[in-house]
Amino acid sequence: MLIPPRGLGRLDHALPSICIVPAQHPSSRRLWRTPTQSDTLRPSQYPRFKGRMTTTPHRFLDIFPPGFDMTSVSRSYYSFAPVQLYHTLTRSYDPEKHIESTLVKSVWYGKQTKGVQHEFILVQVEDTTVPITNYMVLDRTIREESSGGTIQMPFRRRRTIGSSQSYCGPAVDAFKVSYNGIENQLLDECDLLPRQYLEKIEFSRGNPLYLYQLVTLVHVVSEKSTQYTLSGQNCYWFAGLIWDCLRSLRPDAQYDGRLAEKRGKFAIVRNLRMPEKEEITETCDAFEKEIQTVDKNLWESRKKRHGFPDMAMGFRIPDGGSNQDSDGAVRSTP
Image (cartoon, rainbow, N blue to C red):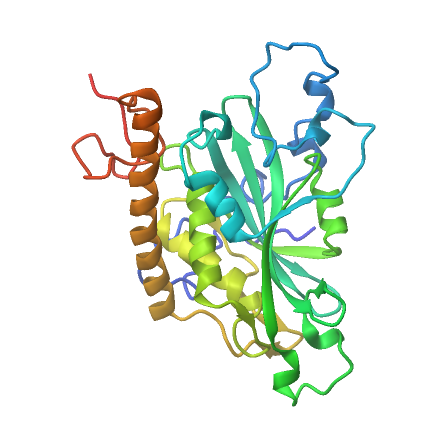
């Protein structure tokens, strides 16, 4: 396992607008520790649902599937297109979806260490009211039109790299949600092993990142380009743009970038299309505009459903009144 040098900080990699938080010394082990099964709440910690009532708080099964309860049942991950999960979480307020309490705890920037060195983001989500945690993979692949399946990178086709038009097609962007909360099993099912984590962001409870906010950001990025191109909007670009936007939107989050120089590289050749500062700024601006609309719709939907909402919500009052905290979350008033 890689042991980082003391006081590591990737100042050369950071954008000028990003505040860098130095990595912790490896003796603490907390910041850079990769997720393991020990980090995941085991199914035995939750009640079995066999037709009897339970007093345990319910959870949103799209994000925390039945695999946490039924250890004898084995099935693959749930897969959601960004637009699909975006509409599920933001179209209207529903207390069953737990949008106020489902947070993004940490994200890892991952890279396959074999083959095409596909890049992806591993997301650790947490519902603070149950409580329960789970993992999901976020990545971009390309659709294989002839078979109807997907491949991680078009290098698998037996064609020359010079024929760039051969490596274009509809992009397949997806959130792949673990069925039972086991990280390695999810990565194996996604054909992402062996892998290496290059960077990590850990979000604070003081300035949280809600899952619906991450999904909105991914939706914005996904809609920027619906086509996969070898030298353009590929897996490197997709994961890289989302990652850099997260760092820009949450500059106070704990960041470890000890292997950041490996991002966007295939073997010794650096990818030709990595996100630029201007593109990151434009995407963050588009996200801020979109999330304002989302927050307004959720706030009005909740008000219509339950009367005037209590103020302990993850989304914002649409006019940005005095109840709005610095992170945009609405806080209680006396």
